[in-house]
Image (cartoon, rainbow, N blue to C red; front, side, top):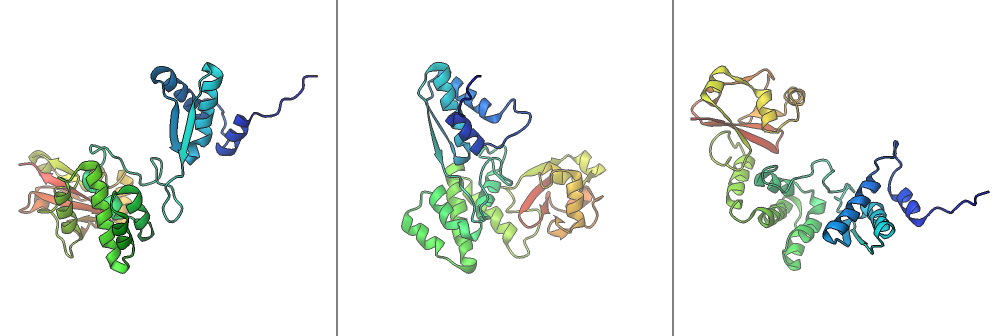
Length: 275
């Protein structure tokens, strides 16, 4: 009889940290382990960083490197950044943001931080800005409506670090225009918003408003936009859109060169009439 071998520590770690999936190949741990091995072979990488949920995958790479090449590799993990309600912040989380300006505008990045939950403001000021500790303590002590001032500081600092100082004036003008009581539609203060252009021919023929919402990424699909309209959350120049079959035409612009479309209170875009 062949004696049974006890499970290896590597297998136990993988079973603890990675849910079993069928079919087992290709598995995430195996692919990530091979990535680590190839990075070591091609570029001399010896250390892999990751969130604490990647511990098992990283260790599998360390073990593969040892067995395949006799390499001494290392892993370093950090606790996941979570919001006050326990949800993780990461690339796979709902509402995650891009750092690339071509994928997410500086205004949308700023707005992401501006919409931080009250309970997270202090922690995020420490994590994502370089403000002195005493200033962070003053900001996180704000209560009631004043906590919004701390959120603006967080948004400004985080955006400045990524996109630079130059974009902030434009972003703040856009925010002031959008959040001002009775702020109207097209015109000043919308320069930082995502926009699409309509040619004179397109405007003359009319373009379905649902198509424009999708183009501005205010909805993932036409059906989602129709549901938004039905629920009263779709607006044109801050006026509720009643009919999902609405066509945006030259007449929609009146004397203006642009109009604003909104999905709820926080997502906006601009349709510009090409001259």
